[in-house]
Amino acid sequence: MDLHLRRTDRDLQQRSRDFTEQVLIPLEDECEENDGLTPASAAVAHDAVLGWEFNAINHAPSDGGRGHDLFEQMLIEEQWGRATGALWDIPWRTSIPLAIGTEKQKQRFLRPAARGERRDAYAITEEGAGSDPTMVRTSARRDGDSWVITGEKWHVTSGDVADFLLVHAHVDSDPAKATIFLVDKDSPGVRIARTPKYTHTFVFEHPIFAFEDVRVGDDQVLGEIGQGFELTKDWFVEERLMIGARTMGASARALELSLEFAKGREQFGKPIIAFQAIEFMLADMAAEIMAATSLLYRVCWQAARGDIDRKQLHAMASAVKLVCSETAGRVADKAVQIHGGRGYMREYPVERMYRELRVDRIWEGTSEIQRIVIGNEFKKRGAGLYVTCPSEE
Ligand SMILES: Cc1cc2nc3c(=O)[nH]c(=O)nc-3n(C[C@H](O)[C@H](O)[C@H](O)COP(=O)(O)OP(=O)(O)OC[C@H]3O[C@@H](n4cnc5c(N)ncnc54)[C@H](O)[C@@H]3O)c2cc1C
Image 1: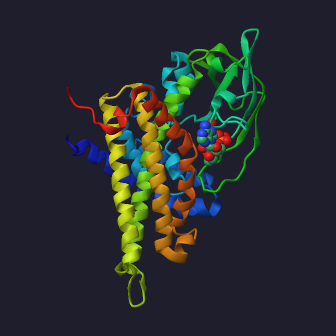
Image 2 (image 1 turned 135 degrees about the vertical axis):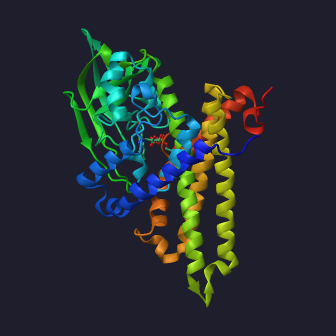
């Protein structure tokens, strides 16, 4: 096993760290105080993404992206994850299913989005359909030469800044015909029904969208009728790995801040790190981060080398998301405890992490759903994937 980062990987990691420290972290206080960025700051940040070449890191250069493999994407997003306020979402990660679009769809949606001239959001979840997307009620019916979409979508992340949506709908209300439609936000019948507030501070919003007899043509069907679950699964796999990356970046920062604080904060005549209770919390944080990060790096490395097939990656990405997000929750909790009252003040990054990392156990499939994916894998093919490492032969 070669456990060394290549020079190009180290350079990429450093560039991403510099971007996080020079562009994202300086925006944290503004984002927290204003519950988002001012238009002026958002515009500067948008230009910075292009300047630092971090737009659409997951898409091919021929489609306007930066062409990074999953391992490189993980290295980048791990560093972005250090920033609070979900500022990691400023660099747009154009949804991966768009890569299978037709030439015309790429020209209209993918390439402008990758270049930062458009922005997408992915709409699957509904009031009655969360963990079980077969319950989706948003339907598409044929009328003449168009499709008519009706329904409502919840929690559409960055739906406020997006100008088109990937809408997961069931043709003729049949889950076997789940299909992704590319819907321009300014189409007649598309409306933001409500913009709820959430626990975390997030640089963008998660609106609820209503679709009232929205007409789209065949040229707005992504892939085939009935390919919806497959495409959404590809999106989940990428997102789950990147949640692993970002939660580990956040955890590393929480540990570093806690260590620094524990060395500087004195009570009872000594720095609190001298108390074994504090030292042990730091030790548990460090050991758990090391374990989860090792898993994350290994799976992304195997994925980038093509060592594992699509099904295996789906099963392993669930383990990554489960382990990393649950680890981050425990790390953030300890970071708050070590910071004492300051850990409960919004002006301290660890307080924000404590609120913000909670959603990583919920979105893109809850921890329970990740366990179900893992369980399904070992029911079908045994536990091999989780207990052995593939070899060259
Ligand atoms: C901030 C935020 C942003 C989001 N962004 C998006 C987005 O951009 N696009 C999008 O489409 N969705 C988005 N979501 C939705 C998110 O993916 C769902 O909330 C998530 O999948 C869970 O669905 P649910 O909320 O309906 O919970 P439910 O499915 O109702 O689950 C409730 C509880 O029951 C448990 N449960 C459900 N089924 C089982 C089972 N079979 N076995 C054991 N336990 C089970 C769950 O784990 C959970 O604990 C977002 C959510 C949030 C909070």
